[in-house]
Amino acid sequence: MTRPSSTQAFLLRRAATRPGNLVLPLPDNLHGSIADRVLRALLAKGLIEEVEANTRRREPIWRETGAGHGTTLIATEAGLAAVGIEPLVAGAIANARQGRMARDAAVPVAPPAVASSARTGTKQAALIALLQRPEGASITEAAGALEWQGHTVRGAISGVLKKRLGLIVNSEKIDGRGTVYRIATGG
Image 1 (cartoon, rainbow, N blue to C red):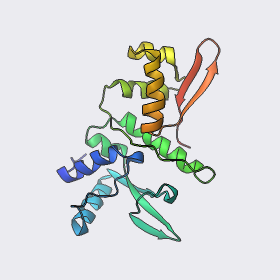
Image 2: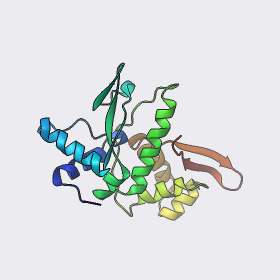
Image 3: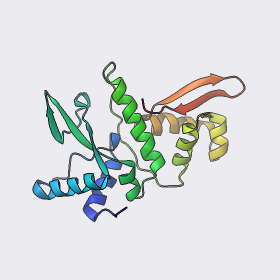
């Protein structure tokens, strides 16, 4: 994969800090034909993709498709990986976005406050990996694996994963394990 230019990398890192990895809006100093060229190069490299914009959440429109609908641009897993954002975190955010888009027709969902970028090897990434496993993880299991206290795990699930990253975390009581948490996959 080719490396993104400094401007492209800036846009990708900026997208990683936004809900749903939104690329738009662009910085004020990037406009016109230069902005168009940068975005089209990112699209051609597969580092960003065009998706249907959620007008209820007032996502910025990249291109209008008619009848009040449009598309917006989001950073892909490959795009975030190109600037050092762990694909696991990017994939979890993308899956959550797909799950929300499927539910949006019936239930409006408030956007998360701020999405977060994560580095490879962090405890946040390890927690996401634990919760993405088919068997999920209980608070006790996650606390032991991460060397955290139980209240820290609960806080990370509700504060970081649910509120900041906007992930859908389901819980289920299982005999012998207690409450088990899993990150919902898209769909």
